[in-house]
Length: 309
Image: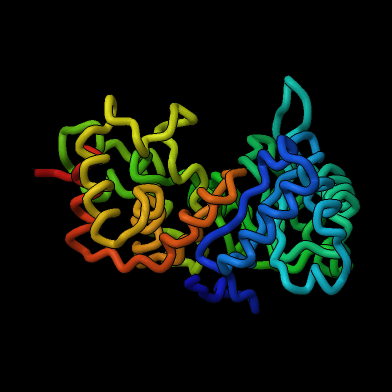
């Protein structure tokens, strides 16, 4: 498993992250087995959010492994807050909400600290000075070591960073072979095509320039939860042909190749795996070690229908 340092921290992290959005669908025994499978594959990074299962996923994670200090020391744990619970959920970056959310996260995870806290989605009513007060308190108390964001564009990050004493070190965004706005507009600059529309405000380039690690969520999804593209020959026949051929070449599965396409990018990008299937987690984790060539990377991108002829 490839590892790298998240710049601005002392965290050496696996290229692959085990996401815990759906583990409340498993038994405690199944959850324990999934976590151990991840660790055996070289994954040391575990992603949570307070809204996953209404907090039950964090509770189940800790219970499944009987969390204690010796277990905690071998894990890098990240969680997110900022989305209000409930059917009419909205975004809340107020100081009180952040502080209360973190206390509840720590209680559910049975740990004294988070390695990283992310603000989950942008709050249109964000007051950066109030966020800064919350971060200062969390950092000074030792409850949170590092901070980041999720689904934020460059100007939202700049606005927040201006008031913070702590550097934002992570931005978690959607990215997959079938969802590539991070790349499309740059490749299609000044073209009169759909892909030339700048939907991401050059987030990938901004994060590289500012030493912010990207984390790719939904690595097998097309669009916003519009279905998995791996194996979908009706919508993605060319892409699956190339995935199958490269899978044969490297003696892995198409799922592994889909992950390898993301980790091949020269930016430091972690891939967040949300699967609850131990076998799929294992084959996905193998993608970190597949040395796709530049030609193979571009062939996959073109097969997904994005490359300019």
